[in-house]
Image (cartoon, one colour):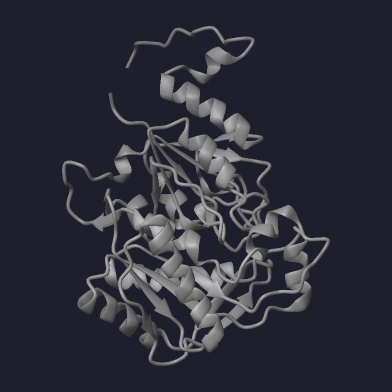
Length: 349
């Protein structure tokens, strides 16, 4: 029987009520993974700072790679283990750099991950944070060449098959940070993080993900549970290394085991976040698109105005019910209290 394949998308940096914080979409991913054979999703969904949850049937796919997959340009090839190269921004202070190296060493010794020697960039990456008029976060990198040279060194000299990046991030606006820590704001780092990983994946076509280096914050007794995962240590690196350890490789030619966009059965996306490249590509296929209404975002792009045919549900719990019925080949209409009668179509041409 054909494997049932689901894509879960929650775009980063747009203040998603679920998935806009530190790994708070992981429970959704865990539930969906139990309802399908293969779950394809991205780091924003699975990363929880020092917290993570291994899902044997989940594919950890960076956002740019997911866009290329949705367009049918790249396929996904499963791996047993990736050799992970680590890039550290030269702007990270020595003590904070050591914390990240020790986190990587801990993942080697405790989790058995395969890491290469690390590289420090030849110049500071100069990350800058921005926000749009809508409140969504984004950012820029001053020294993209330094980042790409570091990645090339790891690939050519250390035979890295996936890249983890730790960049020094500037201090965040205090009001924006307070809102985020209290569970009512946008992740101010997420947009810039996406830019960093996109550069690596686009240039080298290998898995990549980013963890920011930040100074520890003072304790806050009013901290939201959704932000708590980011407050329990000095680094967000462990979840990135775990995700990259078995992230699928990107391929441009089909193989017996590779997964391609036409094999995707269903896509789940916030109802107000349908303007992204991946969902627009999936909408051109026969894929079932499920739009979740109670996961509100600042993108504010619903499916109907842009011509996307979808089934709207109130919550992810309801979405799970649709997946179960769809996988079983059961008509959604037959689960309602009343069913419209069949009509006779004219056979006159």
